Length: 146
Image (cartoon, rainbow, N blue to C red; front, side):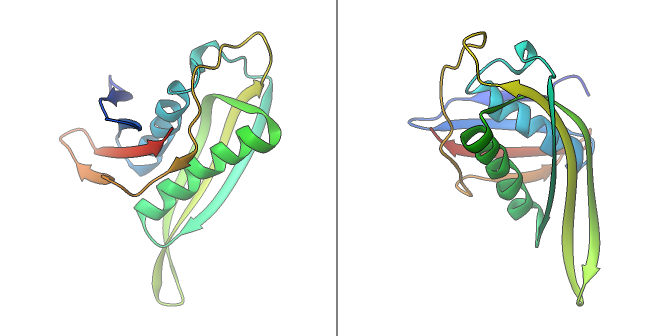
């Protein structure tokens, strides 16, 4: 898949589409798209690794929880996402209900004068969120509060 994500026009907030062959790849690219609204992920050195494990009742909730966790890492640990190293999403049945599990390893660095920060995502929203099938896999659209 050539294009990982694209930033879209939005009146007041940040909006992007992420692409992937499956939900995991889509979520990984969504993380990079969100980071690109705040800094250039390609310029972040992979000095620190973080592991994220989450469960959700659906792909939309999983998206919000995952991206919100990255905002939490930024605010609490001053973690700047540089890349998504490994990502695994599985659909399991739990108490007769479908549950989505995410486990992801990300790399990045701490905030320092070395990196230019040009925005801040405050929250991930369900507003205009879409997950659609495409010829190549999935397209995930997300709007975030800036």
